[in-house]
Length: 366
Image (cartoon, rainbow, N blue to C red; front, top):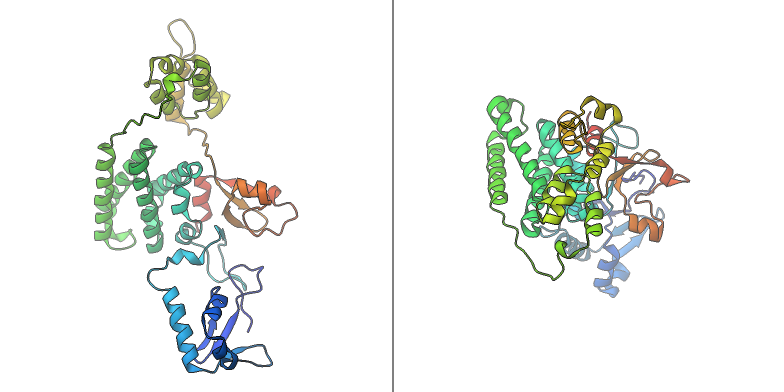
């Protein structure tokens, strides 16, 4: 029986003919066969000339069916079917593929809940949710809404437990609450997908999260060495590795030494040159009374006019050869030479393109 699986390069699933019809053989089939009585297996299966397996013993069929039902009961997670963290992005139907890839399916298959626990991917996921909150809430399907708020709940709980990156989450929840409030007041159920009462409950949940983050108190843990114990050149190197001006200002409030280092004109000049083009800097020059360029003030002036350059520890990648969106694990790529997805190109690295959060949203606009 010909059948095309989820991956068009694969030979397809293995199917078994039973009294109730054709059923797909699960990956736990070998384990189930070991659990059954070997004597019962000798007369319970007949293989015909077309290599089709039929169950002739009704008791054996019902017993194996119960075991499979127990393995895939309510306690099992639905994401166990999607162990690979990649998804084929297609926008139209073909003979091999029917339908198209949705944003809700991408949230499940790419395991954003697991990406939240990775410090390198945390900022990327937060930025993606923030962009969706600003422009894509009305286009989310029911599944996408569920997955979106599930990932958001994971993020909030992680911040409350780890007490790290609270400013990013405050900005995200501020944009989300403003968008939800505007939709409920001005648009209502004529545009929103789903019950308006459900959206009102979600707004209340977001407001409750905001109150929890406002009451968050960062506990000081004394592990011996602190920032004030580090030499000045090390503290200076730390400041030069920060790409966000607000992080530099916040870090400068920790100690007097960091405060002096955070006012370095060369540091803010490097930051302006990194995020903005030379023409943009010339249009918004901020000069002091002595005629010197105030790079710190100019940086925040430019942030109001132009978007800053985005920088993330890890991003999604898109393979132009296979049209597959996936997370690339750099450690596995170095150790096992694994590209992160089943690529058929001769040189997979030459076909990869980093995907920004805005580009990710554009991939699922139809």
